[in-house]
Amino acid sequence: MGGFIAKQPNGLYCRFSTIVDCPTHYNMTRESYLNNATGNVKSREDGEEILRDWIRPFDEVLERFQPHNMTQEEFDKILWKMSV
Image (cartoon, rainbow, N blue to C red):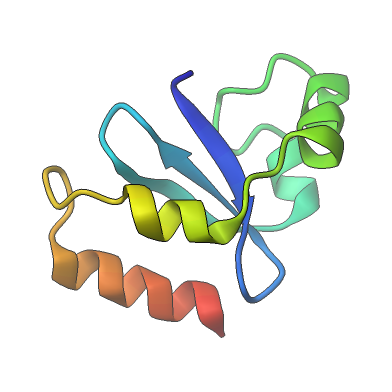
């Protein structure tokens, strides 16, 4: 698994990379994700399946973040944006 999609507190979506241990995309609408904003969805149907069946809890984003490829300060700023 290279990453996962989570629903943010503001109702939008983010992609968390388990390779770099931080979010790579955030504040995506359902449509922008389905239009392959992340470059990781093979087809619209795959994207719909992921949003329907494979969404991870946002707490997992918080638990899995590691400040290796993004500073804690950068992560905190993104968290604020994902909350409003």
